[in-house]
Length: 477
Image (cartoon, rainbow, N blue to C red; front, side):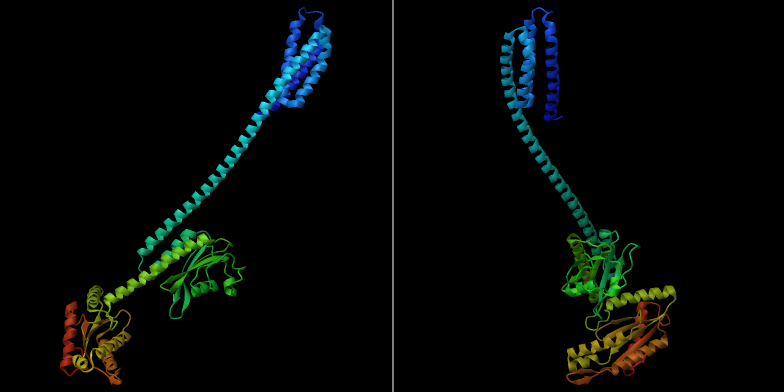
């Protein structure tokens, strides 16, 4: 209960008691006059009581209430007191003035206290409002910070998973799944990768809930192509109202209404496009675009690392001049194929080939010309490979061709075709056509040998038989 409420109740209570006292005095004073001795004591007690009430009115109601009670009391008590003793009325007036002065003094004090109370209350309310607003602001900031921390933890999880991925397919799948885990709901995640041969986008992966429609524009829509061409992020809050783009009929039939897109860029080259769209408008803001931007950067780095890894792996197992496998890798694969053939009862052929008189060719034309010949033969051998075949530069000018699922006759025919193509494919050196010949030995597994070193020995033996018989020929037995 506030002081103002208490004060209003005091006023009502005082008015009721004062009216009741005056009424009692006006009614019972004449009756008591003839019956009670020592009326002076009673009269003085009554005057004190009335004076106290007047003082109370001055205190509680101020000047108006105090004066009104003062006049009403004088009027009501004039008759009864003058009947008792005219002297009492003069004393009453003096008592009333004294009580009025005291009541007015306390009234002023109470008003000052009321003002202080009002100011203090307003200050407390203001401080309370400030504290409440500050609390709301801090709560919102804590909530936003919590969301950012959760987002960062999810981004760290993506980074950790991508760091363990070394294939494009695994990276794309991880990015699609983790991006959907962050955005979730009815959002749809699309990843387009660039087909370098055609310089166009291809839809590679998609993550969505079953209620969302599949994206029908497999080569990417106008928004995806814009992000790829300009290598810039894109935020569209409503596809139907964005005047920058003219959406085609096929894309306008899709259920996407708002979207964000991040091009996957590394070293100035666009690898693909990462897109998140929603069937509702105004879903995405700059915060969501920043999160997608970070995911896209992580994905681009992971894709580039995977390609560098593959390139490093290729450099480790391939000869840089001929682009054929090196001797070490060939021996490892040969050992694997021997074990597989023994386990499954399979067969294969091994061709060992050597360039005839290559040292004399190098001495005559130089090593640069020799390198050109080696590159040319490497290209011919690669063109003759079937699925699963392994071709290697076995030595300086010696080559090994592991022809899987190739019978003895087919292997001889393959060796003859290679020999003829090498002979009939000259290389232009210093405006002069130069050609070399090739000798080859063919061994068949498991007919000729059942161990890797033995089949190499057999093919090598037949290669040197071809050399000893005049070169530029194939020997198979």
